Image 1 (cartoon, rainbow, N blue to C red):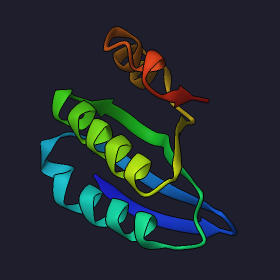
Image 2 (cartoon, one colour):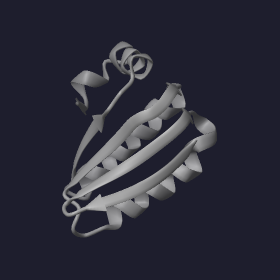
Image 3 (spheres, rainbow, N blue to C red):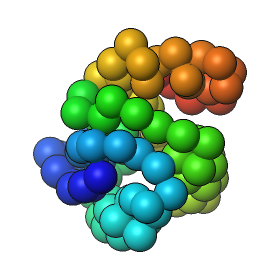
Length: 101
């Protein structure tokens, strides 16, 4: 998986691509640190448009990102989820924890 950051005004977008699993933890963490360190960013969007698979370690990474974003005073939303990704998030009850758009 690759993770890149796009910042547009007060919105930071984590663009993910590929399979989101444990092998992606280093790239994901670096991208998260980059977007959270940007002072102008108030809202972080995790874009799943190009992700077709995620596992339980990816869910854990998202929970850690949520904690870090809250500590930094930034809102967080999961966006552009494909059906397979949305199903995993629903099974894990992430709709109760995250804003999913």
